[in-house]
Structures are given as structure tokens and as C-alpha cells.
Image (cartoon, rainbow, N blue to C red; front, side):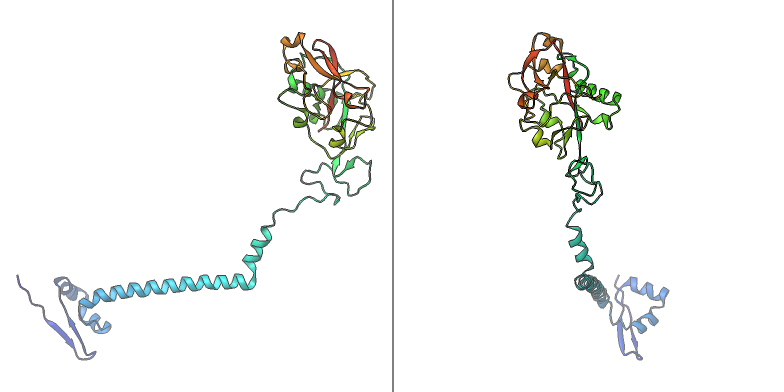
Length: 288
């Protein structure tokens, strides 16, 4: 069917509007298109597509411009005021390191008495560590391994009323686990229960020579006998030692384990010779 649609002319706005589709004609009847077209100045229906596109482009342009402007404004504020930039630069420095001597225990410090006075129990912000020889003796093959030996040290320290008794560990190695790996390398002094200094720090303790013999037990009694160690004075496993089958096996009954002499201050304090694993010797226990 061939349909012809009329043209509408408005003299007031001097605008010509051509209606070119059945849909638009229906809209005219419902929405009073005459008044709307007169107010908005629409010339023809082909322009509606262009206006829509143009409006979209205008909106996009405006939105982009506003966003860019806001971003630039924020950047300008940050740069000028230094708020964001300064904050970022400040935070990048990371947490401050603990200061030894400020009287505050923090980080890896175990004490901080606010002074550098020697011999007061706090050295290089590390407290003195007690070292003792056990009052009890044990067979090398029946220690219960490294864990069992540590438990024996902790039990004796607890019974003697020593503080931090749960931190004590045995000066004892196996082929796969050395004393140097098991124990804390303290910057503080190693002392006997009676206060006598054995070594000024870990390096001195493992240097091959100590200041005082480790012949005092957890109860401050003298015990000048041998101790199971399996360890050289450097803290490393003693080469050639059988370690009584890791200090925890009946099969080690006829084997040998490394021992140290508590009456010595040279390297023999830690390793003197191997002894039969069924022998009864003591342990050295060190506070961590």
C-alpha cells in the first residue's frame, strides 16, 4: 500500500517538519507531537538519528572532560599540597628498627635496660643465658632423641626454679641436626647458675675456649664429669661419632657417642672422645 503523509508547517518558528513514518504519525496523535515539534524545532525525521548520535557524543565528551578535569585537579592537589605523595614516600621507609638502649624491649631484643653497663645481665640488648650441667646422668642410647634430651633439661630447670625453664635445650647434635642450627646465637653472655661467666656471647662460646668450666648443675652443685654432646666446640656435629643412633635406639647399645669434659675450658669441654652408649653421662643445658 502506498501511503502519503502530510507536511506540517509552523509559521511562528519558521520550521518545516516532515513526518516520514507510520510510527511517528501514531506518536503525533498520542503525544501531541505538533506542540513538541514546535517547541524543539525539529525539521525532519532524518535529523532525529543525527541528533541522537550528536547528543551521545556530546554527553561522552562532557563526561570525559569532567572526569579528566577532576583527575587533573586531584593530581594538582597532590603535587601542590604533597598530601598523597608525601604519605607514600613516608610509608615506603618501612617500620623503624629497634633501638638498643632506649629502655624499650622490641624486635629481637630480649632485654633493654637503657644503659651500656657491663655485667648487669643485659648485654647488646640480649639477656644473660644460663648454662648448666645436669645433676642427673643418662645412658646415651636412651635419651629419647634431641626432643627427649631437651625435655630433660627443661624438667630439671623447672624443678630448680629457674626462670624461663621451657626455653632450655641440650647441647646435643645428630648427624643431620647440629647444635649451631638448634640453639639461639645470643649476643648476650652465657653464665652459670651462680653467675660466673662462661662466655661473652655465642661467638665466644663456640670459639674453642671458654672462660669458666661448666661444672655447676641447675642446683648450683659441682659435677665434674663427662657429658653427652656429639658436638664439636664450634657447635657442629663431631665427625666420627656414632651419636648412639641419634640418642634414641636400643641398637645403639653397643655403639658410641661423643662426649665432652666438664672440667676443661679448651675445645675438649664440648668434645673429648667417644664413649659407649650404655654409659651414664650428663648433659649440658643452655637457656634460649
